[in-house]
Amino acid sequence: MNTSENPVHTRNRELPVRAADGWLSLLITIVLYLAAIGGFIAGLMAVTARHEGGGWLLAGAGVLMVLAITGSNGFFTLQPNEAAVLILFGAYKGTVRDSGFFWTNPFNQKVKISLRARNLNGEKLKVNDKRGNPIEIAAVVVWRVQDTAQACFDVDNYEHYVAVQSESAVRHLASGYAYDDGEQDELTLRGGSDAVSVALREELHQRLEKAGVQVEEARLTHLAYAPEIAQAMLRRQQAEAIIAARQKIVHGAVSMVDMALKELAEKHVVNLDEERKAAMVSNLLVVLCGEAEVHPVVNTGTLYN
Image (cartoon, rainbow, N blue to C red):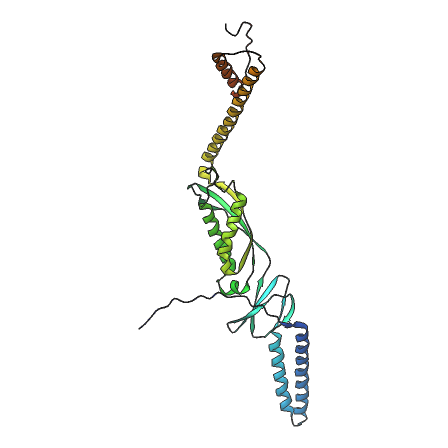
């Protein structure tokens, strides 16, 4: 009975290792070179003089030379915030994170990976927000490699993976929030930039964790309506601003009128009936809420004429 099974993908983990001191290994290698050269000279002299053992000297010198040349391939250097992933015939042997001059098995493949913080300045993306309005959005992501084994073996190209997943995360984030003018207590892209940045960082962390990448910061660098609706949205924002300003003006005018009526009544300045109060309220609201300058008319008669 034939059965088909899905391949199991195992997550790799970084294995820290220490490499041999490069300066001591360099001294040994130089000694091997000198010994090989000396053996060649001695062997040639012995062969020329037809002494016994000349062939053995040449053979030994050849072995020493091969060892010296092979050992020379094991040297490598690492700068601060740089790591070397060691691979021996396809098998992961560990990661060296210390900076300096080192020597390792010359048959090890040494893949260097930068551990420094990097900036990914995303391009402007045209997406639809939560309400379907087309917007332009861009973000900058600060990231660094945290697990070198995952970065090398769990994804094909970790730098390309970071770029693609960052773009996907920004698109997904934009579709989950409204650009502006949200409902009461609703978080929007424009009004809640700090909270949106935290949400973007968390989503990127989940997406890039499998690549051994740590996201240190993620922030929106560009946010605007798409050009085809920018003018319409600008007019709507202006109208909303005018309405909000009118609401505040009316609220303040009503409070001032109420205060004036109470002050007049409490201090017995003048006694007004309901009709005169209504007329006074109307006149005060016109004065306080009107946009044009009001020119008062002086009444030299009585209030009832």
